[in-house]
Image (cartoon, rainbow, N blue to C red; front, side, top):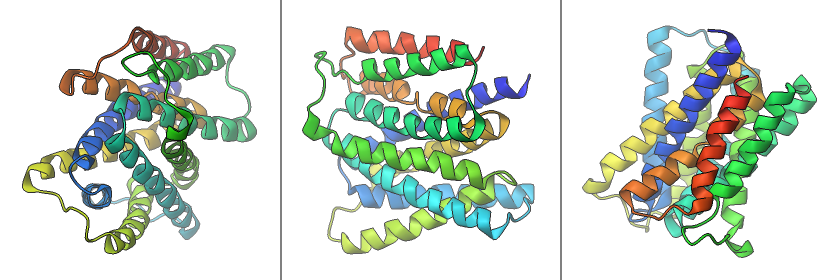
Length: 280
């Protein structure tokens, strides 16, 4: 299997994992403080990264790479806080797609500057992916969200978009250690926020499994994205990974019984077509 096809496979795996993680984190955040959910889930991720790095005996990257990774972690956790707040207070099948559209746009623009234009088929796939995200951003009644509801998804999308860019730059020498540096930086930031919001509700025992799942799936999404970006272009990896709302929409429909509109169904089909075009 060629490197570009590996990038597609890893990018799709990242989308599936991140979508499941966002659903789990969003569910937990409906009954527990967002900050506690993120702190615990990020801690789970850090432990997984540490064990993987030790098990594979990864060489320590240059300090410049680790610094860029830490910056990626800060951007990522800002995006995660905004996303979980949006998921907890709004409709999952609306907030997640808007976030994904913005998250995909940032690395695509950066990749055009650094790597040049992708193939015509892949560009068509990018366009179709954006159409898919727009269609998925319709609620069960087929209505678009109001403008005042865009702030959290836009912040989340920008945070994730710059996470894509910075973690790609930091992960040329290793996979798990840069991600560990990113996770530790995010943990410091979240810990400071938690101290300021320690009066908020702490997770109950029943919420722990959801939080652990969120941490596990979020970690998987990060690893698969880095592998995708190492195997292929940044923009291809980011666009495919940003199709994660399809997973969130499907899980919300089956588990929460949120209705899927005709437009959302069309969005799921468009996402599959975009995947095929990007893989050409």
